[in-house]
Image (cartoon, rainbow, N blue to C red; front, top):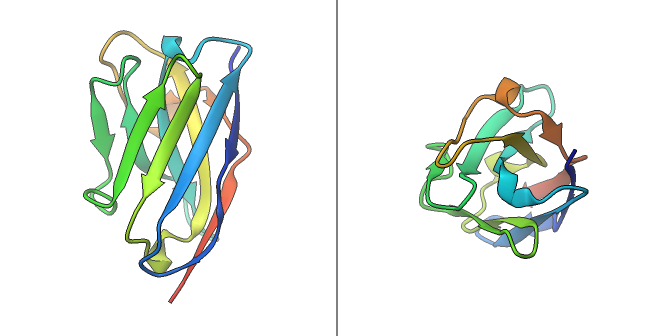
Length: 126
């Protein structure tokens, strides 16, 4: 089954940008719908954005729409999250996740995703 490893987190100022990456191994990423979730201390894990197997369908949480862009490169087995205009409320551990999907399928639901990375910390200070 697929293994996911995130990178790219860090500490930035409000208004800055960061780009997160998630590299898949052991199985082709093209078989999976993938997503980014985040979890702040004391809060539930929340949906950030998802993308279908071929990248033709994208979904975003309202809180990041217009600021974050999710993308994938199946040839490189990589998922990315470009985060612009970062705010202190974006501070969280960010996780990539995947589930075996049919063409065009995406999901905002945590329980739908079967495979998770270990997370990468993003801290935004004001």
